[in-house]
Image (spheres, rainbow, N blue to C red):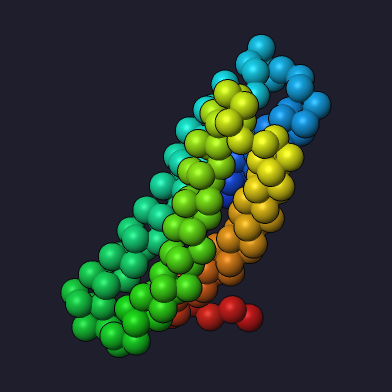
Length: 159
């Protein structure tokens, strides 16, 4: 579980670096890995969607593990309720950010074909990055909350 969570953090860092690089690439028109802005955005989209899928599966898998532990070991159902509350807190911003990013990834093609103004694209891109950071702050808090449930279930107390 710890390795999986650390993988989520590392992938999130790479995704953030790619998003920032793509943002500046769109403004200053330089190549990355010999890729134009459109090509690099495709790579960034793949990395972004893979990362968000990992994060979602982390919360789903951990929640299922907590539920199974509660049922199998006759533990307090409050642990499962807490995990559901965490998922209700973290999933809406993640899904909304995925929607925003998909719109952004589609708009890069519209900008490339001169069907959408580039200045509007940059404003939307910046908004997506800001929302991404806000989502990651919520996600980080949720990682801590879910780990607290796991520690509480194992009866390990912080000193």
